[in-house]
Length: 253
Image (cartoon, rainbow, N blue to C red; front, side, top):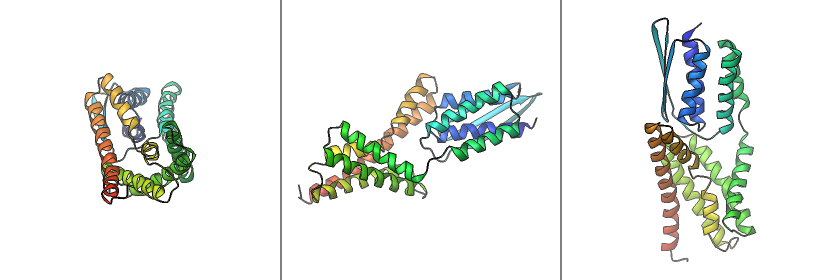
């Protein structure tokens, strides 16, 4: 058994789960299960939103690895599939070659096209606008604004900007689109359009995971995620608020 390959495979699986929005306790459980399936004597895992550390003991020797988490998103389907893969490895005792092949195959197949992401982003914002009581024009406008906002977010994610500035810019994009649509008469009021469209940026998963992690005893990870969610909320409000403030200062309304 190549313990270095086992460490690399298990830590990569955990890293992918963290990058996809997985809870810290679930990531640690997944990595531990994978390592135990290769009959190590002892395994310790410490995961945070920015790093995952794995240490195993076998035949009296300790081996460890650290993986940095530089980007995070939301892909709960990937989280589920990697967790299922860890159970498959544990039950069926797959070889390390089969494990690496399965993980590579999962990552290759478990991705949505850009068109699909943009379409359902528009559907999400339109649905929230409907729930907030928007009329038909506001719902259709929200669909378009959602697509534009997600497109901006995806493109900015490829740059060196951090999440704070990306969400600020996206919040500003929502406000600008709403102002323009109001001025040309497509919508009669901005509040429901902005409320529905801004939900695309709200860090609901991060906030939920922070609460679950705190309940599970993962205090460092839970508080870190809570702080991240609060900062993202502030950045969204800041970007949106600046545009609306400037619009009001122009005396148009």
